[in-house]
Image (cartoon, rainbow, N blue to C red):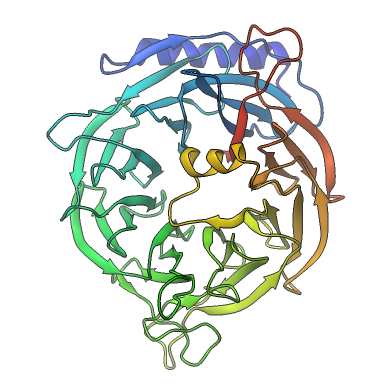
Length: 464
């Protein structure tokens, strides 16, 4: 077991290494945050990281780090103003800020370390404007979709600077999401305005397929853990004539085509997309891939359901073909905004934010979500526990008001839920499915000493 003093020594050594190795294309700042003494069970080092925005004018947001095994706050890192997305590569945190910058630092070393401010270019050629989403692939680089300039920025995890910009084939694509992981050398860029996906090779950052047509208004993408499929969440258009419901398109990453769904099965459409939810206003907004059961869980923010899509054993060469399909639309006790599953596949958990009319056609980010929170919307305060064998809700857990984001620890021991309006994060012990403890978000003004207003947390991810 590593003593507290030795652990702090290791963290300090890692920080010194970062400062020495940093290049000249970045801004480095040092900060020191008091570290509470760790308590609780020893275990592999893992952090739940909570991203918050700061409503105070021109103020930086932050990330709050909670040690998974000890249930203690171990660091607060300042980000840029109006952060919109919390991304990760192996070993590093990447926060996309609203001023066209990225804050990055070593994920498990939030104290006594240096963090980098990476400025994305805002002038020609290929400027980066309105970055909204990011992801990584086998190269370890961080790829950022820029909705305002119809391109993707390639940020080197080694140089901590933008090294390349990938323009999309035509204008007005509005890339809003990106799907990839370390098991694949491709990135799948989700284009909301053109209802398609652009495929990029991360080996040389070239476009290898300009367009894979998917459903109407795609909003989210997630790659299977083994890199074999990509799942695209399409919000549809309930106001169209006839209404177009939300759906999921499944892409084969070897052939780069949409895999047809099981003909005649529930939700299977002529285009191969799988309809999710029970109404045309289901407004799906987020998906989580369960690698244990090879299933996709989709949160339908416009109604009280979580859709489960079967993706195990997909085989286009088999006779008959093994194709994906809808297993069930599970009724839950509120409108979910985010969903996760335990690593053993036994349970899923949905954050029931109860947004009044879903989240429209844009991603869950600072602009849309925080605006709704300021208006008093998305005020749900429950988490739904879903039995993944019976495919039904078994109980609800009270949490902080504004349950908008959720993630599970890799060891399955805890689930973390952001209470955006409450300004806190609840830690659920999965052994009892009850809240074990709650931590407040960082203060808006760190020098405040009494009745201090808090930042607004809105996203959580567990590292590694």
